[in-house]
Image (cartoon, rainbow, N blue to C red):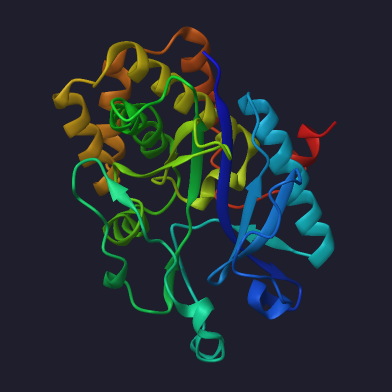
Length: 292
């Protein structure tokens, strides 16, 4: 099967002088280029990275590495972070224009009719997301919701299993943004023949390490193939995965991961290796190594 992959992901960052907000650097709130390998723009108070589409997870990781390295060097960052939740200082919020302060997470759809409610968080508390994109001639109106459910089982549940973020922050984020089953569906070509989905569940922490991103994209490909070949997953599985994701239930997620028995030895080894990384903070070195 042929797939087209991509990401858009949000981060916040600081320099030796303190937090650096993209609107204060003159970045637009919309993507400015669709032809470059990567594009940085603002999404509210966060820096958002979009990359050129690619056919393999490793190519997407390469594009992300180029974008992250360029941003780091251009603005002199000391640290980048993709936390589930972050706080915007009141003075920064008060001085920002309306197109920055408004929430940009809509429209967002949910296969379980259980959409998040963005307004539940205080106005100065924001969230990040790492949205995974996949398109294929084999994706259609009859199977795209199956893909989202398989993605919850493979991607969202596995992330819950390996994530090192504070559970309380993950739970709060899920109530307002990125609940299990969150997606958008769109065409990925000008002729509107290549249909795909944007899986909107993961936090920006996926960009803390290239191994995180590669694994999540690989699992999304596996989930999509399962949906195309086998239809909807068992409801009992999706119920458990959905609950694990929304409650950040690491133990429950480990049980679902172990019970699936859909992953070959190579994937299982990759998951366990990535689980040991525990990249709570962003480091540039692993991304530089990707480009060597």
